Length: 125
Image 1 (cartoon, one colour):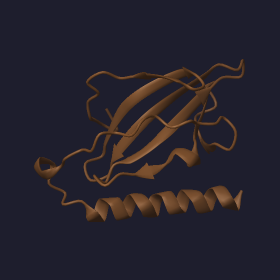
Image 2 (cartoon, one colour):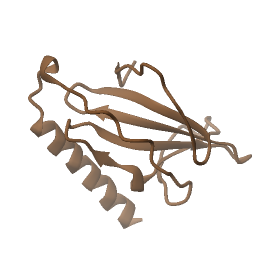
Image 3 (cartoon, one colour):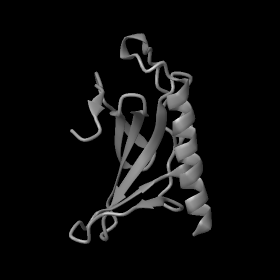
Image 4 (cartoon, one colour):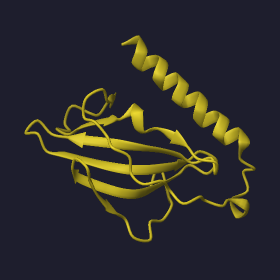
């Protein structure tokens, strides 16, 4: 349990460092080409607490978290249901602007569908 809490703290620290390195000016932002979607695992996820009315379980695979030279934090978010269906999203997070981008989706371990012309969107939208 404390290992997950430590990991989350480190992730927040890394995101903060990425934000502090950013100029904050969106017109100066140059995104690097996103790396290929990484291999993810359903085991060892850091659970994301959801309301009890939602049957899907969500978790972040800590082995997939990286920070690019552009300051974008990239990770794989995994969603699964009690029947065993698994879906995953390979996403990027721009801490400086509060935006997220989905690079690829997976409904089968090891098989990714790349999102064509992926766009940044606000986290709350």
